[in-house]
Length: 297
Length: 296
Image (tube, rainbow over all chains, first blue to last red; front, side):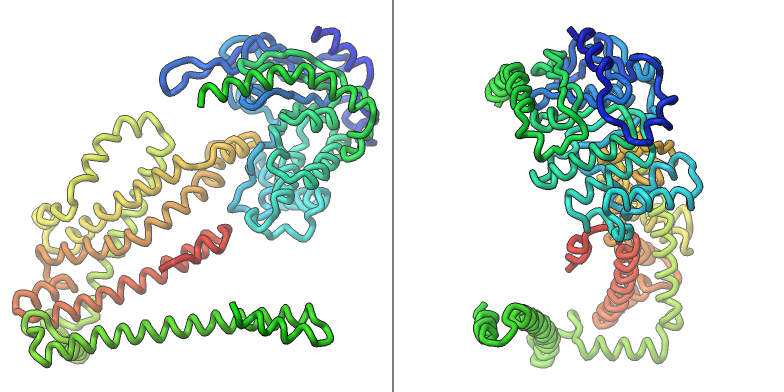
């Protein structure tokens, strides 16, 4: 099932590309060699009581170059675990995780990660938060700050360079986080429910901005969410995960045209159809996880 | 509440209602806050006068025996004598300088050691687990009891006082640094690592600034403990210092002298508190102001 879906997504290029595509064209592997590949991945944790908890079971997934892939599943099903395995923050108990054809070992500089909660450094102002990546990686200070200023302007925060995170709104902090990640020009972008803490209006704005930034960067994205609307509006492909232990239940290709306007695409009949189809699949998992939560409490 | 309301109503009739009512309401608010400030200061002064005056009056009326409990005018006279004619051990400022130097030195050494060990154990779970019980045991000892030991081992000079101050300061700073390092947000660590930070950058840019909130909070208490260390060390055996002045005053039934020396110590502690608060403001600029301004 998954293989046939892969072919679909690689046969139809995910989206119209910006001028930057030419520059990044040679960077990408030819053909449809996946950028991220999870093969039969299982992840177990040891709970404080000494029992094992299986977060992922035999999860297989691959993401094509430049593809925007959304992972959706009920709360606590192991979506975040999947991301941390790809990012090299954690290692699988069984199976293998490959990035650009190589087994993941520790941190990969080609990967960017946007966290669910605020992960901007509260003791750094906006400028130094955004410049952190290049500075960590040894870019000369002046150049790093210059690039940071450009990115701050790009996410619409020009004039806020001296502010500290606590002086910004949630949406602005998220912009800082995006600029902080994008400045490193990652080829793989992992996003863990990045907008879940924002109010609905801000969220739609940020989703549109993310699509714009992404189209200029041409990175492969794995976007974790529990919001089906968000998943369909943003992604080329939506993977439904089962209630923990997570494994892939179904993969849906989202054939909505790009560029998309996240606020308006929800009224597209095709969107409604897709929503209906995927929800059929997702509903059972949500119910299972809900029942479990009820019993455990 | 009623005042802004009437102001509001009065301003409704004017030409530019909203802007002017806003500024008027703001002015009323500022005025109210200023009045409150003034009232509190006045009441504080009154409280001081009542307490000191009551003490003095009690002493004069014979309700309080000034031989045992001293009296404010006597304390003041003692202070004047010390300032003008010096103490039995020499000039007053030398005594203050000696004690302050011991406390400061002990404070600095204790802080550096406390932060170093706190960070080391906070980052190394194995070491923390290994040494945990011993550190808890050491912490449960009332450490002022080490004073005679230091006096025997290090003599009557300043070393024994510094050592006592170090021991007192160390544990406070150590536990705070340890906790601060352990409380570093995991997301921030992961984020820094993904952004490309190496181990040293991780420490300098994430762990240390995060733990600094805790460490600085501990500095407030630990300087007073450094003073306690110096003074108690001087009690046990010394040739100069404020501790010795208190010791002498006690031995000669000079209650006023004990109180006067206490006042000097309090002034020193208060001064150091101001310095540390300024340091805190500077190092923790990034924190929301509400957090750092709530002080007693």
